[in-house]
Structure formats: C-alpha cells, structure tokens
Amino acid sequence: MSHFFFASGLIFRHKGPVLIISKPTLRDVAKAAGVAITTVSSILNNRSDSWASEKTRIRVLAAAKELGYQPNQAARGLRLRRYNTIGALFSDLSNPFYAMLVRFLQQAFDQNGFTLIVEEGVFDADREAKCLASLVSRQIDGLVCSGLNYQSHGEALDRINLQMPVLVIGGTESFKGMDTVESDFRSSLFHAVDYLKSLGHERISYINAYPTERDLGRRTEHFYEALKKYGLAIGSGSYLNCDHYALGHLRETSREWLKAFPAGKRPTALICMNDLTAIGVSRGILDLPLRIPQDISLIGIDNVEVAAYLPFPLTTIAQPMQELASFCATRLVERIADNKRPDPVHRVLPTRLIIRESTGPAPVEQGG
Image 1: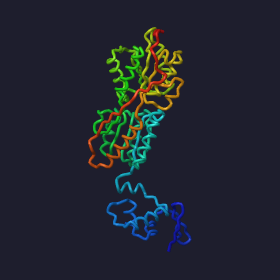
Image 2: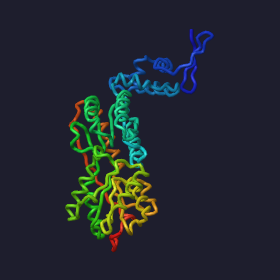
Image 3: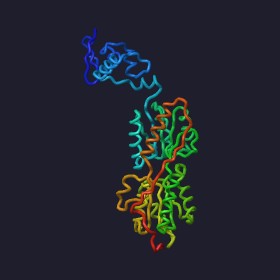
Image 4: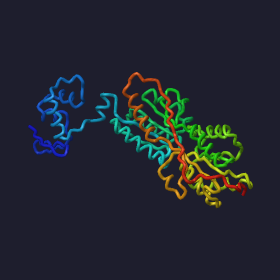
C-alpha cells in the first residue's frame, strides 16, 4: 500500500522504503476530489459535454490548485490537434524594428492564449530553410514571417500553408493562398518626396540595403513612381543599393558613393529603406564632412525608438507596429479556429511621415 503527500506541485509517494517523486496526475486530482478521472478530465478541459455539478467543478478545481496540477500540454495538443503555439521567423532581430515587432506580437498572442516561438534567419537562405523546418517540427498551429528570401522558400511556404495558416508581414497580394499584411509605403513615400520638393530639393535619391529578392514592400518601385509624379529627374544617381545594412558597410558605401558625384550633381536629400540604414548612412555623410540637414536631408522608415534620440532627430515614415501585431494575432487565431480555411486576405495599414530635424531646405549652393 502506498501513501502520498504533496508540496510545490510535486507528489511524494512512499512505496515501502522507496520515495518516488512525480508531478500530480489526473488520477491524483480525482482521488483528492473524490470523483472519477473522466469527471476531472471533462472539468479541467472545459468540455461542453460535462455533466458535473457546479459543486463538483469547484471541488475539482480546488484539488487541482492545491496539488499544483499542470496539464500535459504535449498530450493535450496531440488529442486536440492544437498546441496554442505560433512560429515566427524574421530576417534580422538586430534591427530595432523587428525587436519591437516581436514584443508587440508576444503581447498580442499572449492575450489570445498563444505562445510565440521566434527564430532568426540572419539573411541566410539555408538557415531560413532550417528554421522553417525546425518550427514546423515543433508542433506549431500557425506561422508568421517577414523579410525572408521568398524566391528560395516559396514552395516550402506553400506546403506549410496546406498544413497550417501562414501570414507574411510585408507580403503583397502576390502571395497566393496566404494572409498578408503590409504598410502603405506608396502613400508615405509620395508624401515624403512631395515634402522634400516643397523644401526646394530636386535631386532626391533612395538607398536600399536589402538584396533585390527581399525588397518585398516595393519601396524602390514606389519611390520612382513618386519622382515621376512630382516631375523630378531620375538618373543613375537616384538609387544606391548597399545589399545589406551592417552599419559599417552602410557608412563606407554611402560615403564613397556621395564622394564620387561631380560638383553640383550630388543628391541633396536621401530617403533610406529603414531607420537603421539611415543611421549607417548618416555616418558616411558626416565623414565627408557634410552636415545634416544643411547639406543633405535624411529620411528613414520605421520610426524605431532610437531615431528620435540622434544628434539630428530623424525624420521618418512610421509603421503601425502595434496594429501590425494585432492584425497578425487576430487573423491567425481566427484561421486556426476555423476548420473551413477561409479565403486569405491582404491588408494594407496606414503609415505617417514624422518630420524631425534631419530634414531642411535644400542648400542654396548645391555644388561641391
């Protein structure tokens, strides 16, 4: 005959001279509450077919709490085919935008009772493929991703989307079968170019720091559209592709690029693909040495927190990060709950231009 006592969510069973330590089970809760195991299971899993009285339910919940009973999530997931877990894969968590987005996503999924598992691809297609396989193997209910090499992983994401809902942040309507959400960079880039032109800038350039296959938001395309709309010249100096946004690389690349312009041809305003790019480029500008904004105006995208605390607070296009996170959580939870797999949606969220001290009138002397 065995005897047991409990402490701190553990059961201590005496079987003769042997002390066996284990976690409380449904059987332990049932014994403590004086009911059948099936009754305990129906109450703790909130089953709609439970016939237990309110008095019994209270007694079972009290026993479970007193014993420190914790359900076996893996077993529960296998039984219900749902694990209340979301996988997330992002290109680069060193970018403050993604770090803040992850925080908002965690909060949004927490409110819906889901856990977020985050992986980082570090701009490496092979690592991204491994991360996707790892996340799927960890029994997730849905996947959210952003900034990946979708040319390499399109087929893999299509296969995953047949098993569970996939949502692409920054994805366009071209992602067939998947939910997508993006910020309205077209309107905000038009606004930024119009604002710079109103300050007298006629030579405006765009600096990209993503490889071409990762420029999902079509920011470069929208920038050229804006130049055409406002009658500004487009030439070889209208665009610089730095390939990646390591800060030292951005500093050196932008410095040498600006230095190579002949007198009177250098851009007087730069729009960067994100705030991190603008920070790296700003060091290249100051190295020459040029002044911000007296010689060159500078605009970023994202509105990360540090952008407002630079020596020249950065004019930037703010993405609605909290709204992005809220949409991702709401949409994925809805699709997980709906076994009918509703048609995918493409959502475009508004952005806004925040004007700070890194932009100003075009220099009177535009040469040199």
